Length: 323
Image (tube, rainbow, N blue to C red; front, top):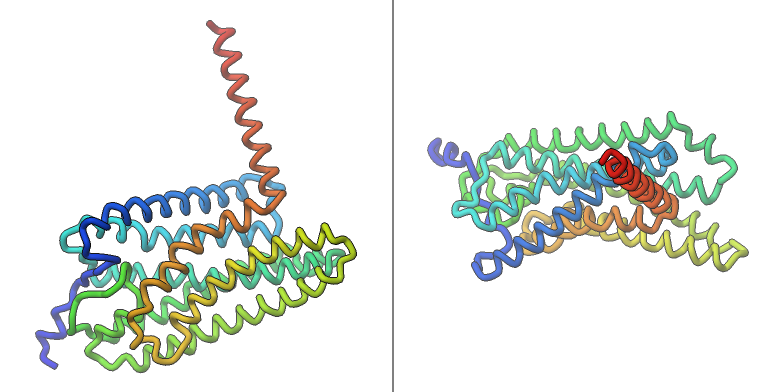
């Protein structure tokens, strides 16, 4: 391979969703709406949990960090995707590409560990309620959250470091709406076997470890729920667990299907449909699944809204008295 070919790739072209001009405006509106709702929902939840002392418990600390990582995922991908709907060149530099993948990988890896921590927290709360404050201490909560962020940073550092060993001398077009690792492997003129192997080992290990924690936790949770005497309490607990487990299943299922299987690099036709679920749909749904179905969060939101109304009334009264 000539030296010239090795030096050609300083930027890539993201092909995006479609080349049909008539669909671009519609898709832009749809994904812009998803982005706004995702950011408002997740950042609003972070602010609510941070400012309300009643929500400074392990479950909400994990939930707040999950919302923060979902916001990070959306910020890493969606702005560039929206820009490319009306951009003529749809280009992204090599370093921007690596940065985009880094923050995506950080968010998804941290999410895996945070979801596992949330499942364990719910297991302790439902199956050992009298020992909850002992087993889920503040120290353990901080350690689990810190561990999620450490793993979240280590995984993309390794993956991005290995990407820099590759040279890209084939087509500059990435058949995706963001810079993902699998499409980059397909453009490499160096055999990406080592990269594929390490991706399979790391992603597979993270997913298997965290999924095992989630499944075991939910198994004991369901067993405890079915032994409840109250039908009303059983129904409410099952309803909440079902919605949580559905979100977790879609998230983990998408990642397993995408990264943790041999030969994933060759199957480029599945990239965009599967990626839409774990990069756009799950961050959109999580605030609604984990907060709007939670009585405590709803009561805090209502309380804050009532405070604002009361403050507005006081301001109106004071302004009228001044006049």
